[in-house]
Image 1 (tube, helix red, strand yellow):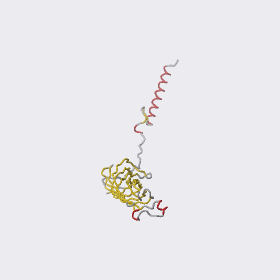
Image 2: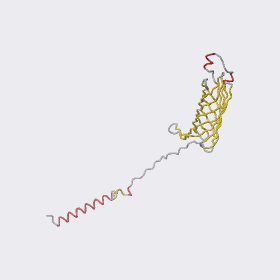
Image 3: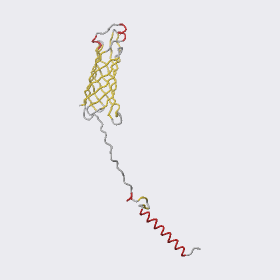
Image 4: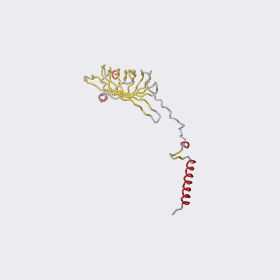
Length: 223
């Protein structure tokens, strides 16, 4: 049976061991709740902060003046280059009005080449149009060109009236299409348009409604 002396010695040894461990823990920075607040690791802040990206966009400008080039497919004739000028007015952020004037010269139709005859005077092969269109923005977003280039872009639906001259015809018709437009800088925009010029045409005694499709790219100045 343990004696009172042995019990006293055991209790003293246990108390000394506990005091020693507590002192070591305090010296190492530990507390009963965890890591000492005075010994928290420093927070490393990044030295290179991300730079804000500046995106060109239409701010207060309401007008665009530009030129376009592309291809015009004249029904019953071939596809030929087309050139033109355009003027746009941004009535609201999602609505624009536009005037376009385009000109192309048709090559001979396949039946003319096969017969070796010209069914039109030389000036009648010129295809010209002047159109008044309204555009409504249906999509808005950004175009990415590489990792560092972001451009504000929009897609508009276009519709309006056009005055068309071709093959000794001068008729009022309709134009329908879509326009992809992007802002390169605060003063320059680019557009890619696809349109259909629809009008009634009479040719060698045959009258019909023709569809003349056009694909163009334009460069415009904002002001």
